[in-house]
Length: 309
Length: 320
Image: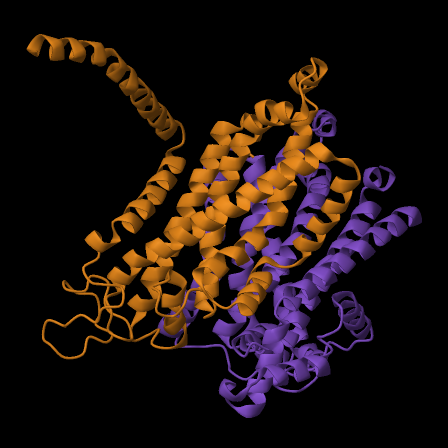
């Protein structure tokens, strides 16, 4: 019996070592990336911090996002400056700014990921299809893209949220519509240049059907641009969400959106309670900066043609 | 040359038509709400509104007709300068927009000029001294400009002005022609905030356009003729690199209009921004539709002008 388990363990051992290998390799890869692109690594850390804070919000936040905590001396907790109990102070209702910032990370990440996954993926598919289809379909679709480009992103987002009503999912939809036109353009031109490459001609020459050329030869070569665009537009989506919430039409008022937290700060108490107006802005800035730094570094590493531009 | 302008102009017509269809379509999805809005506005509460009332108002507004007729009717009125009446204020939208629009336009133009003045030298220096300390600083500055939310920078500027200077831009809008000094005092800080954001993009484009031009053969020729570096960069490189920068500035204009709307609400400037946001809060779709359409028309027209200028400046584009 014991012998049998031993044997089994021996048999099981090699695959486990095999499983460890890619992990070690990717660790080496991360190491190399950090040395070559220190700014990109800082961006990566900021992005990672956002994800961790968003996932562990209930553990990290000292109070709830809507909770009205009791002050140490009792009484009102409205506009208490940063102290040991409220590290970043309290807001106009008496809620803990730090806790709201931590829960706000969830909204930023949700809107950012949601709009990028839907928006970039959809534009990517449309861009690839258009470039491959060519002809009259491509021509007319390009005119629609032109028209969409003319509608200023934030204004169209405002209009969409106005029509559909403010909720996080409508904000995502509004951001998606604001981002598709430029992304379709970028992907389309990328595919057009790949289409002319020798290996695509070779694949077509040996009789590969269109779907095989697209999925085996073109799409994998666009993966880098997908990743880079996704990183940039995550930052873009987070800023637009914050702007909409700041204007009072994004996240519903009870949600702790970073942009929404700044609305009151802009209207009043800038001088008496500056902490309310400063920390949410720092959070937005740091996260968007993180995504942009990471995007720049990824672009340099993944697409050598664009290096240093 | 005329052939090029004609070709470009012809392309403009379908694009602007498509833009009107997009704008119309966006608001067409909620016809019931428009009727509901008018009814609840009339009677004070939504409880008494019946199905028949909604039908009646829809008939009055012409919302029961086929979509393409509604669109045609709407477009025809727009062409005659009739953007409809505001559901909330009851006044013609175009009349309300006219004055506000010029305030917003002045702010946007001021910002784009400031951004251009800062961005071009920054981008050029960065390209000429590629990978130097200066290059890294200016690239980082560009990134900061992109990542810094405009509205937060606006709050910080107001905070800084009151805290350090004990001064705030004068309230109550003064026109540029009536009282230029007060007007500039009011607009310069919001324009600087907008310009900082815009500068970030423009400087990036200027840098990469310069890098591209610097690799051209005529640059080597200019240097081998013995021209000094200033002449080479200023006369030969900059002139060619400015074209893409101008194009991008045109596309930036739409983004800038969006930013203007936010910044107006922070600095209490009575432009289109405040009007649009009030309209959104009141669900006054006629106004929202008018603003979106006006913004799209301005951006498209600007791009048309830039394309034509581009053709005049660069013969290669005219004949391709």
